[in-house]
Length: 572
Image (cartoon, rainbow, N blue to C red; front, side, top):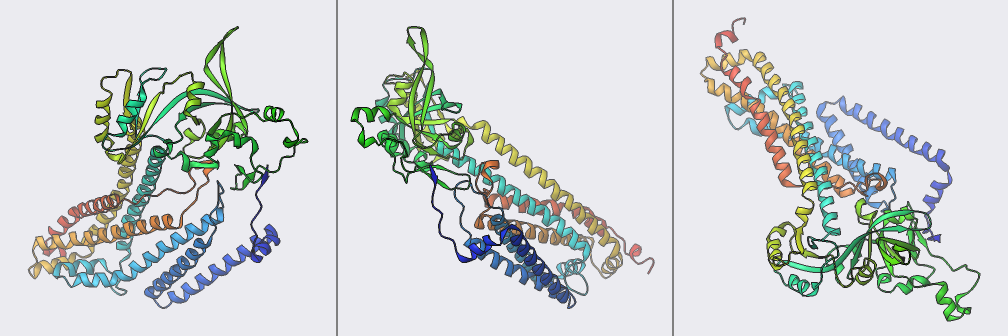
């Protein structure tokens, strides 16, 4: 067994490797110091020209950052296997965050223009915007800015967390549906059931059913020269299993063809990949270094030295536990033993690893073993019986419509039961849904806390603008008009915060999705951060934020509307 040959490297890569770790750290530190100094110097120069110039400079720097880091991220090689390179992820995350800062700067620059347009909508919008804006710069007052920031940060966090949690849920659902059938017809007792071929043909004709395949399942103990592990045997039909689950697509090392032709495993070519390293490097079988040559042996002796065992496909984690590679021998021990002269003895059979699969589900990768249906029936002593029929439907979400049709086929058979994937994983998906709802409620409380800032802001404005309120009432403004003015102030603050939070959350999530953030699969058992962007979730977040912030304006607006003119100008 030997590692695959390395690809040729460029001159820059050779120079980078030649300077060693201290040299690389020194260059990175020097570049960081230069970039930080240049950014600080530029922002200080722009800050002397006013707040708008500073904001324009920050937006341009963010645009340069997302352009350069985005180009760099697109040129990074995609690691293979379970490789995790930290600085690659820093570049990708930096590109996504630079895009977020650019959007924030762009929206901030567009804010004065938007407020100018709102001012022109009438008397009430004019007064409300004037209270929110700073007098000289035309941007926002400090207290308005803090209130907007509180709402924006809360909405941003809610959008990001909901997207990531939705991504983990969608990834889990995809893996479950990829490694399990959408529906199963199972034997109600041990020993399987017979006369399954006519039932299989009938199931395949049911409307909504895409494919069906027979399965023989059981438990066994796998034993190698170095370790033991409990396994779940799944005997499958090689011709139809690929139409129901993603076994063929999940094969990482080896070939599915070796399951059909196990004799090829005894004479693998030297360039055959038999394993994968932690960094994704491929391990080849290499040349045969045995002291004798098979060609010089008698055929009977040669066959005896390399017996042909049935092939099996095992998961990546099981292969690690048993220290197995493609072509290695493994012993399976069945708890259902054979009757011998000394009584019941455990049934043992020798197999050879034909392939190693990676499903992304530790539960499957650490225990599942696939073999041909006839070999599983023989090993599990099922004779010609099977333990179940696995079915794939056209639309997994509408499996409830197909299940009654399949149940109708087996209603007269008491030895069979039907379950779909929703029933089998009901507890898991219910827990995920409950967790998502709980997280949404907890983070919505953060928006509610931010709404208290709006209440304080409006109450301070009522106190600060009491003279203006008195003058407006003195010249004919009604209590209802004053109420609408201060409610519109709160709505403007809440709307700006909601828009900033939802848009920046969406941009950040899309950036992470676009550039891709890989995770260490040895820790999280997923190779990249799963993200799901659901428009319904973002709509609910925006609607909830607007409702909470609007309700927060009611009490200060009522207090302002009840202010008497004489109280406002008493000390003037």
